[in-house]
Image 1 (spheres, rainbow, N blue to C red):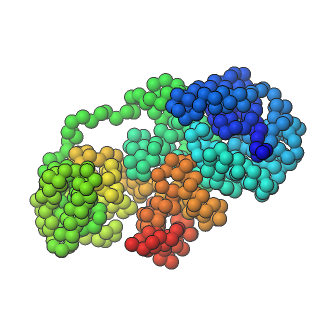
Image 2: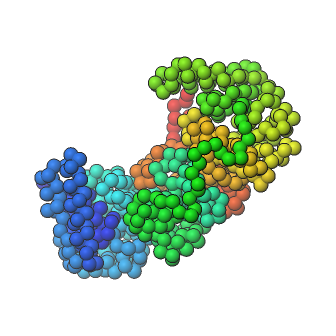
Length: 594
């Protein structure tokens, strides 16, 4: 039986080209590797030999399969070697001039029915196709790095691409063990269109000195479950590569979120391109190494008590919801005496019962001994009035995300709490300073943004206002650290670190759906497989709640006044229709009502 697209030429044998060649050769395709650069072919062959040897050693393939893959990979320096190919994939540098030169050369060499694919992740496939003698056979085939490991492949068709070509390449991707996602031709396609905007904003956040590189990266790893922080990822991708991609995206989209942050150009021009040069946002052990070493910007290691912190022996928690109960559990688990105060004794008792249920699940799963559970519960005293918080050294409010409600509570706490007590708000979207100004002691007020569920999530954003005292910030850090959380410092502005980077990404995903560019399913697949996200954007939106997401988007837009941050119209419409996600049974998807 004939094998579809049995002979494939790969033009450009850099890291990506060599990886694509490996995928093809191991899947039984005859692979013609072409690169005019001296030594490129030898490096690609050596990479294939080393990779397949590791696979044999790990038992993933047999020695015979390895020999077959190596035999199917042949290298050349002349483009004429592609003459017999059924499919040609170019993976040369991201430049219209270079890629169009390759396509013109291929037009003169390959058969009329040969499919020509570009591996671009940012340039217009339509523009490249228009320069070909047969634009109907030109499409995009965007693999992700490292190609052998990453399952996602974006199949990009232009208005000129023949459906038969798209169908043939999509089937090949499936036969290679990949997950093909069909997308149209727009800057960055799906995955990079969303990913690089997020990376660019992270670079701009660091450049503005809003937060340290370590805190930005830790916030996104721990707050969103990402495998890498954005600045470390930029170093891995290559700062020069990222800037080139963003420049291409901005040239097409004119979206300010794609305009490269100046620091990317400054680092690139200084030759600090990331891991490959030994230095980028971080400093590495050697060029090409992934081991980060200390440099002048590395914060000092904290091994003992946090310097300058006030003594905290007891913690008050104001609220009766899921977050209040979670914070009470965390603080009691760290050994603090906790007063859990609600608007009524019944609500307070129900919140403590919620903690008991959570601890019971931990015992059932073998994560906690029953004796330890009893000790933690014994430290939590429910109370039906905020008056009971008067003796606490730290009070954390976790009431409704409504500024009027929070300000009223802070006014009460100002009267009830002892002098020197630290007052903290868990707000995720409101200005901390507005809560502080409701008291006569704004210097004692700080933000402590826990993430839900608080017992499981390892991050706390410590939000300092222009009025917050140094020892108050230190106290919040000390309590978070003792509770086993990773505190990150940031200023009092909309979104703090995590939401300021996460929600524009989510908003852009919604815009893609609203513009009928891609479906929620395809976007979720692309970001999980291509970006390493634990949840796709639409899965996450339905969990968070579309009303909550809209409120955060509006807050970001109101503060930063960037047109690109305006809430997507589709989000506005769904919220207006009462489609709020899982909690209402319908959001971007249908859900079973609980």
